[in-house]
Image 1 (tube, chains in turn yellow, blue):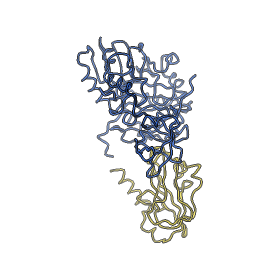
Image 2 (tube, rainbow over the protein chains, first blue to last red):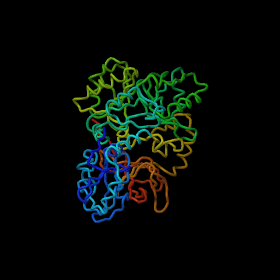
Image 3 (cartoon, each protein chain N blue to C red):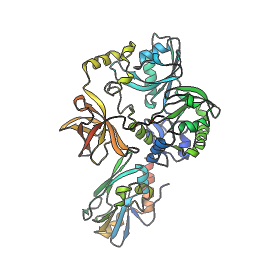
Image 4 (tube, helix red, strand yellow):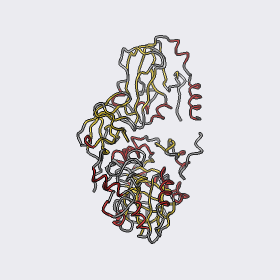
Length: 131
Length: 369
C-alpha cells in the first residue's frame, strides 16, 4: 500500500511539498511512483529559475511511460536533486526521501494552505482508483 | 474497480495476492509488473530466470486427414518441413499478404496441429480459420479455455523446470516440444518463448494453475526465480526484435515489409496471401521495418512520428528504454531508400526532434551454448 506522510502537503497532480521555514522540498507521491513503474530519467529545471504555482517544472520518464511535473506553489528554484541523474530509481525506492526533486524558496507561504493534507490526498487517490 | 468486463486468467486472484499490478491488457486483466519492478524482472530473465502467466494466449487445434493441407493453405511458413513435436513461427495471412496474426504451429502428427495465437486475436483467428477451411477434411477447434499457459524464461529456466518435469528437457531443442507431467499434471512442454532467452512454455489444465504456479516459484527459489509482468515481457521481446501484433504487424503490413520474409516460403505452393507477396517481392518494397537507437538523450515511445528531413514518413511501432542494453531503442517503418543500417533520421518526442540511427537487429542476441 502506498503511504502519505502527515507532515507533507499534496496536489491532485500527485506532487508533495515539505515546508521548512520559507523553503519547500518537492517530489512525487508514493502513488505516483507506483503508477509510473521503474523511473529511468528525471528532467529538472535550472537553479535560479522562477516557477509559477502549478507550472510545468520538468518531466519524469519510466520504462513504460512519462509524466509532466508541476510545482505545487510558486517560488525560485534553490537546488535540484543531482543524485537523480545517476540514480533515478530513488524516486521509486524513496519517494519522500532521496527521491526528492527540487527545493524552492516560497514566494507566498500562504499558497500552501490551498493544498491537500495527507488524508484529503488519500481520499482523492481512492476516488481516482474507482473511476 | 470497474473491471468486471475484463477477461481473467485462472491466476487472476493469485496475481492480486502476490502483488501484481493489474491493468487492462487488450481486454484482459493482467499483471503489468510485480513488486520487483520491470527492470528487475527484465534482468532476472536475461541473467537468471523469471515466470510469466500467459494464459490469455489462445490455442486452436486442427485435426483430421487434411490437417497439414489446411495449415499449409492458411499459413505462410512451410509446415511440411515440421517433424512430429517440432514448432514453427508462422503467419496467418490475409489475401493481401498482411497479418491476420502471427502464430506458433506445433505439429503433434501429420493429422494433428496445435496453434498458439495472440490473446486479442484468438476469436478472430478461429473465425478466420473456420471460414477458410471449407473443402478440407479437418476439424478446427478453439481449445483456449482448456489451457493455462506459463512461460518460464531465462538461462536457468530449464534447470528449474527439470525439478518438476518427468521428461529429459536437455533432449528438447529450441522450438521443439513434448508431452509429459509438471509436478504430476499432464502438460504440453515446449522450448519456446518471447524473450530472446532460452525457456520453457507449458500448457496445462487451468484448474491446476495456482498449485503449479506456486510450485514453480518454490522450485525456482534457489535460482532467484521471480514472477514477472507484461511490461518486462514487452521490453524483453523488443530487445530481441520480436514483432508484436498491433504494433509492428497488423492487417495493413505485409510479412516482407515487417522483415519476416523468412517465414514466407513462397516456393512451398499455394497459401492465402502468397500471390500478393510474390508480386511485392518482384516489384520491391517501398518501406521496411528497421531497428533504431535514439542518439540524443530521450526516449522514443510507441506512436511518435518519424521524420526524414521535414517529411513525416511514419511512426515508432514500439519504443522503450532497453533495460539490459541500457539504450533507448525502438522499431519503425522507414522508406526503403532510408532503411539501411547507419541511416540517421529524427523522431518527434513531444515537440522535440531527437536524432536516431538505424542499427543492426536483433538489438540483443543471447549467446548459445
